[in-house]
Image 1 (tube, rainbow, N blue to C red):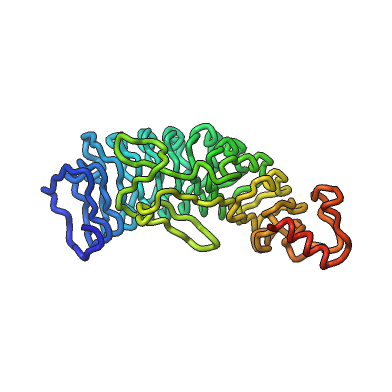
Image 2: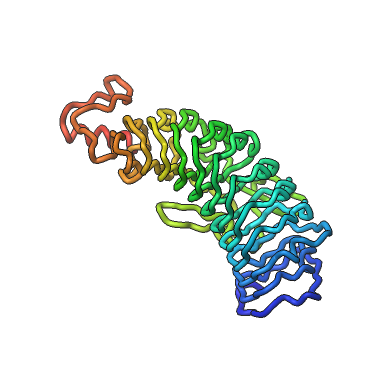
Length: 363
């Protein structure tokens, strides 16, 4: 019944037990009826619901596998009732008005693969309860008010995570080196926080970003909580929202028509307080689609690689002590210090030769 103009409230007597209910993209409002929790997959996204407490806090366990409540008018603190949703593998609360701390019971969702809290007003430290959700593949708490440090145990908790978006919060201190243990990462977005310290050299060790193998594929069917070579998605709302080429891009339910997904690779730590040099190991990652380290306090020379010089100068802007191509302040009369030596890499002090030399590195 999705994509209609059905309005009003869901009746309290409604009690349905069916594999999938899709009421998304309508004009429903008010309280989410408690009786529809017996479904396998439930999609209520893109409506005007304002209260989900009665629905979530029934004192009975259910078999709900996917729950989409994104793009509604839900507000206040998130109810602390998630212990009743042990089968839940996909939870989307994006674009609501939730506030306060995420309840500890979220850590009981041991089968959860996908959690999207994007664009709410959740606050406090990143919940340690998340660290119990060890099946997570996509975690997006971006565009909230989370603060404090990024938990150092994050690298040990999420061994299967592919997408980690902490963008636009109030995280402080250094980026924990344990993040480098997340060797299945395809998207890492730490932009627009208050992070400081240096970028570790181990950031060049994300092996999934080095090639096109192991593309993201999920199966969210109840009882089939695993990575698959195929895709199955319900007809719910957005899968994940990322900042791509400086615009917000949402992968929506048409994703069900796609068999394999390559999210490309993405490295964004812009608008923080990072210091030191760009790690030379980052030059080894050859398939990055986006690099953005702008507006930090980085220094030294941008490592030369087949890709790092191909990005626009704005990717490195706002770091007064940073030099090297493609920044416009780069001297055209010298060879970069970290270019390998040898007869095939020699450069004469002529502009045309220099452009040709850089062209070889930008192929």
